[in-house]
Amino acid sequence: MKSTEMDLKKRGFIDDIDTEHYQKCNNHELFKMLNSNKAYDRTSAIRILSKRVPIDDLSLVLLDLLTKETALYTKLELSDALAKGTPKTCRMMIPYLGIIGSNQYKSIPDKVSKKISYPLPRDIIARTISRMSVDCFDVMLEVLDSGDLTKISEGLDAIGFMVFYNKELRTLKHFKQIKNVAEKYKDNQLILWKCITCLSAFPLEESKQYLRLLKESESHPTILLEIERSLKLISER
Image 1: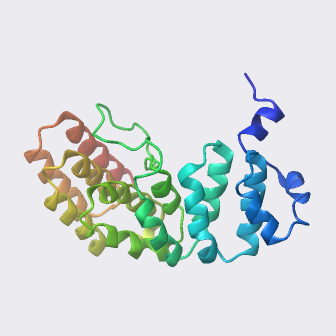
Image 2 (image 1 turned 90 degrees about the horizontal axis):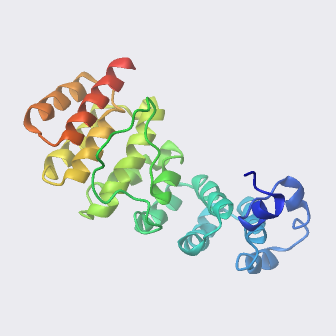
């Protein structure tokens, strides 16, 4: 059934005409609207404030809102605003990796993706970071050395996505960093599986060689399927 206009508004959907009404509001009024009980008010305030206020100055407010927002389109607006951020914004987002929502993988699935594109991160912060400027990539690499398994797991999704769609990131140095994570956490099936997926973004001979070595030593059916998928993606790129 097609959603009505009122249904969409309840979920925070707005268009440019909707925001015209709010343009006359000053920033103080807009900040108050961020706590409105109407989702479309919150979405409008986020959209206008993100154009008026430097994103680095707004990021912590948006992140706090994202932890409790339930309206779909308002969450998307928050994500879009944060995705325009700087490396400083990205660093503010790292503590929130893996803690918002419950859509993240807790264990490896029984099946692997059949898509030829890179899987969209399930964690909303990882998904947002994956759309940020490549200037933020080094911040994400720092996550791999954090020792925090949750953040490493979600960070790998963002890193792989960024590499897949930004060819300047497909370097031997970055490949080795992912390989090192796979070696360090080889007994953690979830992280190893995500490393294998991440390696599909590296169309390098070294990546193929390492995946073939893993194929000889691993026995989990999903991991073996992911290795085959990654090898196929690399070969087709």
